[in-house]
Every structure is written in structure tokens, then in C-alpha cells.
Picture: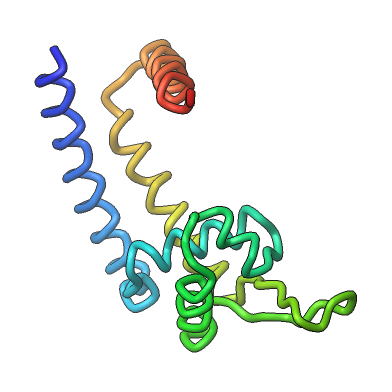
Length: 145
């Protein structure tokens, strides 16, 4: 049974990758997405943590501060993020997404929504509800420590 599930996950993964690529091209977002997976993870973390410090990102990704600094500096150079010095502690900087960083996440989210719509258009409303419940159950199961 696991082999079949792995096969289905691979098919969905390929389909999502193709769908996202097509969406990026159609929206002119291809240039925006010319990022490494690590940089994309950092952009998501910056959004989620709402103005994290370098130390917050070190803890989040469990990497050395020099690694975080280099990645954040690249995002700043590429104008996906910016840093603001803390008024309480001048040694600390908070990182925020720029308008370009926010646009990237908006395009990405719309692409995921389009894929979800494509993936579920063959399902009835009841099947969609059941599918969502099953996905939630799976997420809860894989999120356990």
C-alpha cells in the first residue's frame, strides 16, 4: 500500500511542479522565483515570524549565525527583504519582507490555489470535504514529534 501512496505522491508532486511553473510563466513571476529552496524557506519564515532577528532565524533553522547572515544578506541584496535596527538594542536587526517579497508569496499562494482547484475539480463537494478531512488527519499525524 505504501508503494502506491508513494507513486501517487510523486505524480501529484510532478503535477504541482508543472502547474506552478506554468502559473509563474503566465503571471510573469518566473524572475521572482529564481531563488534557492533555502531562500524561499527564509522568506516564509520571515513572514511567519513577523520581524524576526537573526537569532530567531538561527533557532528556527538550527544553523550557524553566519549561514543565516549570508542568506538574509542575499535576500536584502535581491530586494526580497530589508533590515531595521532595533531601537532597544542597536546590535540587533529585525528582518521584514519587502513589497517584492510579499508579491512573491502572493504569486506562490495563488499558484497553489490554482493547483488545488485543478486537483479537486473532478471531485464532488462531499468528496472535497472528505479529502480535506483526510489531508488534515495526515498533517496531524506527520506533525507529531
